[in-house]
Length: 308
Ligand code: ATP
Image (cartoon, rainbow, N blue to C red; front, side, top):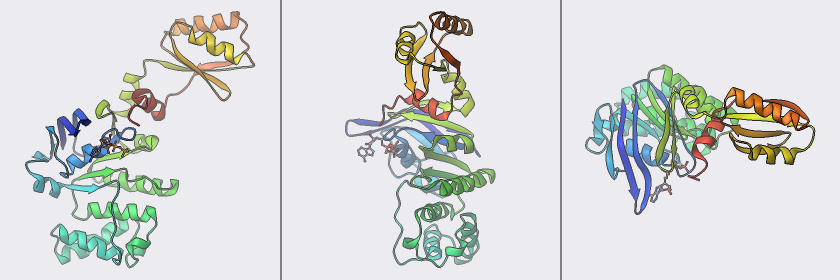
């Protein structure tokens, strides 16, 4: 449904997106993750036909985002990371205005707007003024606006940003409902565990390049050639950190609260030898195990923070 091929976008001398290729199947919820300035908004703006790429192509439903913007716009609903709401318009009037802009007849608007309000839990607010809504309500209204012409594809640029935990959960549940209804959704976020829970696939973008893409578990498996060892001991913290740092197969070791976390690339046998060696050297080890990597760890491991 979304096909991006060797996409490149340069602002003056700065390459914001570099050789990005991506295929998103119909009905997929695709999470786009990356540090600040990684190129998420730039990529999404190209998909939304708002800016043109420097080279490469982006197609939605077979239509090229540069050559056939009208056709693409009919297929997509776009929720930007920042959007204004107008003063002196009620929630209903706001959606009515956007519905009319998309060419919906009055009858069509009268049918779809109550449905959208119900979906985003704003039915009670239909006569309220949009500038009086809370941040969470405004974000949900933005989502309703993106949906008013019943698009097949949704491009959601950080829809949960700035929301409190409850509002984030509500937003996530609405997006899941849309996914279950068969929409193809590309969504960006910094809230990684949430993306893992709601997305079928994720792509990790850093400094304009897609550094990993696929099912969350598959990426995890591919990238996690190293284990994170978690060690607790009674004392001698600094000397164990130094000892680990000079051990073959240990990429790094740091103290984190009551544990030492070490990234280790050795085999199980080498891990057993390491533990035996540490005990033989008299380190008072209380526990020695592997940590479960999660999406946050994966993200930090892949991106190394370069884009921020
Ligand atoms: P964030 O998570 O902070 O929203 P992002 O991943 O969406 O970041 P982009 O907004 O796409 O990243 O920005 C990518 C890079 O391009 C950044 O270095 C940014 O400063 C630069 N950039 C974006 N828009 C412009 C512009 N109009 N002119 C010049 N540089 C730009």
